[in-house]
Length: 190
View 1 (cartoon, rainbow, N blue to C red):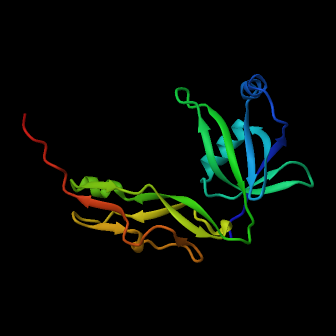
View 2: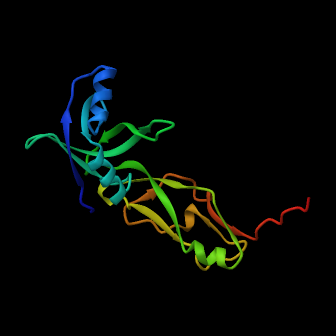
View 3: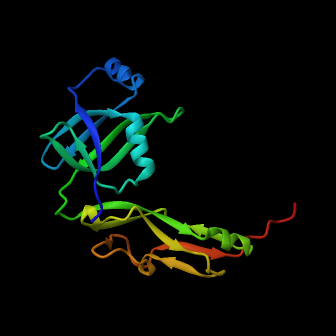
């Protein structure tokens, strides 16, 4: 089981747009923690700490949001909202989870060895960027790595071909195409 990444958060009351804008200017991100059957809890956390944690980990990482010495939440990131032009982080939504109950997550699929395929003059087409999986949150891998270095034109990888960690099962259909290698399409002469 992987270790949860701890982030310090502060509870916040529902605030006006002006107050939230001031929070963002001061280097904080507003967020919320949702839990089945109860109202969402409003929080703020330091933008730099969140960005650093997301760069070192994946969206399928279990985060432990620590409010104080008595209160903490085990969560998964469900959504991050960004400003369309500036790409500034506007809001983050966490889903509270139980580490002993199965849940679902989308795990990024990472093609390893792409350079070998391209070096041989072939084209790698990735049809699926992430895989919907079910399992215990602590067992989720950061990414699903697929070695494509030895693939030739005509080779394909489907969901059924993936080797998932013990206890993790795919929610996608086994025949769903993930990756394919082909000869580059010839460009028509003008």
